[in-house]
Length: 150
Length: 150
Image (cartoon, rainbow over all chains, first blue to last red; front, side, top):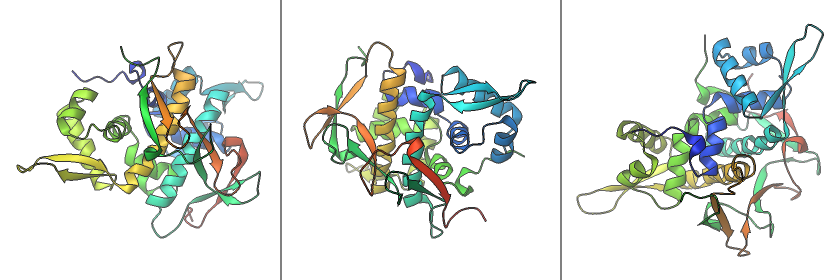
């Protein structure tokens, strides 16, 4: 039997993928992040069907990543990132760095990030929250946590 | 018309999703990372069909994220992360932190990471490669890069 209930796996990666585990959801979050917050804007930018866009927006709202806000008196709605959604943008920033390096070919990065604190064009690095040294695949050992599978 | 050729979008996020934009690929990478490198191990751990697992492994090999290595004389093969694949684990580390915080409920994190450099149980933080200050959604402005859409 194929197990596809990612949200119930005892794994935070699987549970994150339960929220954004297909390509459209991260791209919707990308667009909302840069200010394309209305249904028509998202549909035009992504070239996605209205049906799929509606499903993905509902899914992201149900999971507390986006919320609907009325923006005029009819009312019409736009989508904004919640705190939970805003923290998910970390993933997109890391995706950008990897895609820039490995998937951009000779044309170079499609988008650059200017970091407000220093004013420089920059990328994000993963650092340990405890000691501030780099924290990548070969810098850690995985251990069973309290919420692991019994 | 629905556009689904993510690899051709002028966006490093879309191009990354072209490689891992469905739930199984990141979970396969997770398992290979922790040492489940053989087809039968992956199939057993993930509860995925042989057909889907074969397709996803072929896709990840074609994209240079995994490579096949013979491990005995028949030969039989195991899958190992390339440098490109190893750097993709950054994404999983960030997913883990987000899923731990937002999707773990009261049980707590399923898995903990011990950071070799300091020996502590820790999470990764995103820091600017230039100034080492935090680099999250609200810390950057996006600008057009050289490889952007014309």
